[in-house]
Length: 138
Image (cartoon, rainbow, N blue to C red; front, side):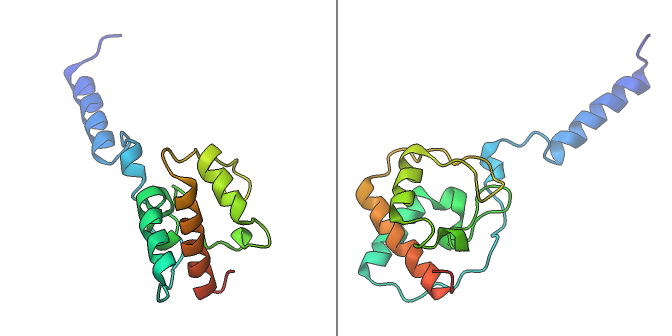
């Protein structure tokens, strides 16, 4: 079979359209998911503000601003299954240090968070628990 100029042009146009509309997006583009839930941010105390800073540095790129999650990327951290009585604070430490198997969400497994200190994880937990209390999911 011989490809004519029209067939070749058609393939080139199809590739250009696919790239233009995002079929070639890399992982950095995927992280632009829309927030999954609305989050009311309460007045934060000193510890919670420190936790917010640690969260923004280590968690927000996946779990979104104010732990609202990102569509197609990661779940919100104010989800009911993350209440203290179901997954305690230690679960946050383990998830951050070694990752977490997907079992309450459909976003895939959570990888470990490189470079996050145990002290920062404690502050992050305080911040997230404060958000959960303010939003009725603690």
